[in-house]
Amino acid sequence: MNLMGGKTGLIMGIANERSIAWGIAHQLFLNKANIILTYQNDSLKKRIEPLSDKIKCKKLYKCDVSLDPGNEYSIENLIKNINKDVGNLDFVVHALAYSDKEELKGRYIETSRQNFLSTLDISTYSFTRISNSASKIMNNGGSLLTLTYVGSNKTTPNYNVMGVAKAALETSVKYLSVDLGKKNIRVNAISAGPMKTIAGAAISGARHVYRYSEKIAPLQKNPDLEQVGNAALYLLSDISSGVTGLTHYVDGGLKVVGIPNQDMVNI
Image (cartoon, rainbow, N blue to C red; front, side, top):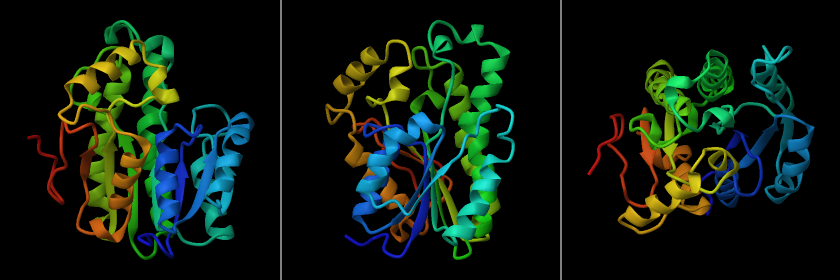
């Protein structure tokens, strides 16, 4: 397949071969995309370097979007370096999220102020930052994609402040799609459902949620990396040129996609 031939994009958030971001990167690579990756620290760099080789990664950059000192302009500097080293971008995949795992258990009402701010900053605001910076070097239009979860609009066990962050993220997608539509830049999200990833494992009771979701799904299974990667391929390629501001659900048939340029619909 050659759906992404000639397109260059940035993928942020690969942790290992079980990451949703890796599933997306692999499907894009199979469709001839030129891929740039980021890593947060040297420990993660060692994990993803072998993966970057598998997809013939064009460039690997360090980028830490946390509130730690020195990271204030991490995204802005990243985009400047990409533009200097590689050129313009055609797509960005934002797969960044974080919350203190000790607060992803028990009751949401006990969320600490510090973790609330940190969770929203890394999981939500970083997408607005990357959208703002990357859009400046997307001269031929393009596509921005982030990852969400059903806990954004329904309560799910122990998801707590991440649900609030994902709700804000989905609303950000809508506002960004309006802001960037004039530049022919589309903004969408994928909700992948329960998956066995490092991020998912941080949530207390994740195994129970995974098994329950698998049991009640019409397709009797949770999505795999290839299926989520194909959904991303659709939203990042020119096939979905009329789709923006959408949350695309990939979760064993529990929900289906919405209408181009409109909110999702459930059936």
